[in-house]
Every structure is written in C-alpha cells, then in structure tokens.
Amino acid sequence: MKTETVAALYDRRRRSQTAATVHAVKLLRAGQIVALPTETVYGLAADALNATAVAKIFEAKERPRFDPLIVHLPDRDWLERIAKIDNQSRELIEKLIAHFWPGPFTLVLRRQSIVPEIVTAGLDTVALRISAHPIFAEIVREFGSPLAAPSANRFGRVSPTTPQHVLDELGGRIPLIVDAGPTRHGIESTIIALRGGKIDILRRGPITSEQLSAFGTINIVTSRENIAAPGQWLSHYAPKTPLELIADAQSFSARPNQRCALLAWNPVKMDNRFVAIRRLSEQDDLGEAAANLFRYLRELDALGLDLIVAERVPDQGLGAAINERLQRAWGRGD
Ligand code: TXA
Ligand code: MG
Image (cartoon, rainbow, N blue to C red; front, side, top):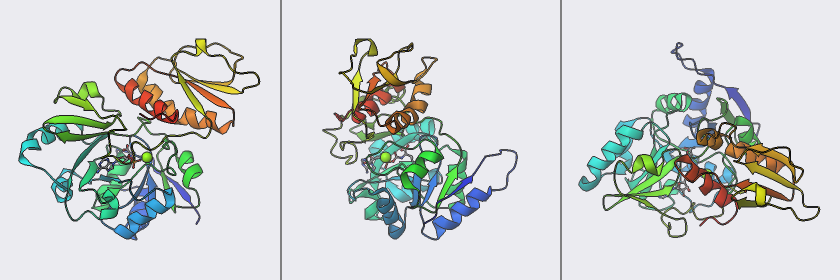
C-alpha cells in the first residue's frame, strides 16, 4: 500500500475544511485507518463503532488484541452514548471534564454496549478523551462519530511526534498521514480512572498529578499493580539501543570501546565520553523537554550505538511523566 502524506496547516480565518480533512473523513467512512495529529502524539484512527475498521489498527501496529484503545469523541454529547456514569461519580466527572476537555486527558469509565469488544479488549470499561488539536477536532466532528486511536507506532515502540516518525513506523501499511507538524506536548495523554471518589492515575501525562490533586485524592497506580490497564505494564516506549537511566551524567563512565549517546537534562559541554548528545531543554523547561523527548530518543536510537545514557529530570509536574517514559525505555517499567 502506498502511504500518502497530506499537509493540513490550519487556518482559523478560513472556515472551510482543508483538503486533508476531506480526504481523511472519506477514508474513515470507508472503514480505513488514517494517521492524525493530536496535541499529544500522532494517533492511528478508525471508526470506533466499526469492529472491522478497528481490527486494521491492531494489524498495522502489530498490537496484541488484549491492549484496549482510547476512544476520541466528537464532543461532550457523545459521552453517555459510549460510557455509563454512576450517580456517585457524576459530579466529579463533570468537573474534571469541564476543566480538562478538550485536552490531553483520558478518562476510563464503564462502557456502553455499543462499543465493540475489540476496542476495549473485552474489558467492561472504555478509555475516552476529546482532543484539542484543531485538525483532529475538525476531522472527528466532520466524521460525526467517535474515533478509536492509539499512538501511531508499531507496538512497543516510542510514540510518534512528527509525520516522519509515523512514516518510519507505518509507511506502506496505512493509506494516509495527515501532517500538521510536530505535536505540542510530545507525550501521551494522562489516563485516570475513578475509584471510591479517588482519582487513580493509570498513566502520567501532560495533566499532572499536582493539577489533578485540586479535584480529589490522587493514587498513582504503578504499572505492576495496574492490571486494569493491560498495555501499561508491558515493556513499552523501547528504543532498540539499550538505555540506562541515571541521576547525572557527571558520574557516568563508559566501558572501553563502548559507544554511548547522552540524553541530557543538565547543562553539558563537549564531552568525549559521548558520540552524540541531545539536551532535552536548553531553557530547563519541562514542557519543552516533554515535546523533545521521543524525537531525541528516536534520533539517538537511529545512530545504532551501544548505549543511550539518559538523565532523570526533576520529578515534579511534567517531569514525573517524562521520568515514567524513561523508566519504561530502561525496561524496568515498574
Ligand atoms: O495521547 C494519547 O493518549 C494518544 C493519542 C493518539 O490520543 N493515544 C494513546 O493511545 O497513547 P495508546 O493506545 O497508545 O495508549 C492507550 C493506553 C494503553 O496503554 C491502554 O492499555 C490504555 O490506554 N487503556 C485503554 N483502554 C483502557 C481501559 N479501558 N482501561 C485501562 N486502560 C486502558
Ligand atoms: Mg501507544
């Protein structure tokens, strides 16, 4: 299959749809899969209510069928057509949604029976979000029904933050990539579930635990105990090159002839211990670091060295979400 990339530069003044939107919606209506930009990472979308279309996502990604997908809603009115909300949680859910939707925030709720089993991997829950990306929002609204969309990478690889990453991962397997440039946040959405009035964070992301703590007691569900999020405890976000996570590159010494790259948080000078160096943020800004994280990991991975040494970032706010990804890339995702 030939993979076409179509640019969709959004113009707020021009109200008509972009050619990319028209093209994407046509393919989605025909039960095809399409890579779309979101504010977090690129997603691989299909009609969430069409099991045959959704099966193509699993096939293209080589994703195991027990790993459920996130359903992206066209708007808030779809919420209770897809999920059930019990009366005890209603108030909290409404507050969270009012605050964080549209945005990088995914909520796990009990599912309605119209959601095909393949989407939820047979679970009785469904993960939901509304994307704030203008192109994604335009496409899902025009499509008029929810889109199932995991990150647009092959299973077990880091999520794509540029159209080129998607092409590297899925070129030849999908008909269309809608190109809206690099994604804003660079890491996947925060996933939460509610339990007994408390907020379980199943995956850290751009909406931080500090932000969520304004709404209730937070419980960070570590990946090992998190059996309810099947995809979470698998070794994930893995570059091919072995990665080691350390506090500070100062204390690192390479073995003789070991070819190493450095993914740095701290300021670095020229350093002959490393063949290549990428600093996550020259401004010491965690948002910028998150946006660069997967791109730099891919760049360093592509060099085919013996080891990527990554420095842990400060563990507050977005930093905790970045460290969670680095920890997984290290292969010790618990
Ligand atoms: O930012 C994002 O969330 C991106 C963009 C494309 O929206 N999507 C994304 O999807 O990261 P994916 O499939 O790569 O990661 C979704 C995670 C998986 O680890 C999956 O196991 C978990 O969400 N998940 C999905 N449904 C779930 C459910 N019902 N209960 C618990 N975890 C669930
Ligand atoms: Mg993923």
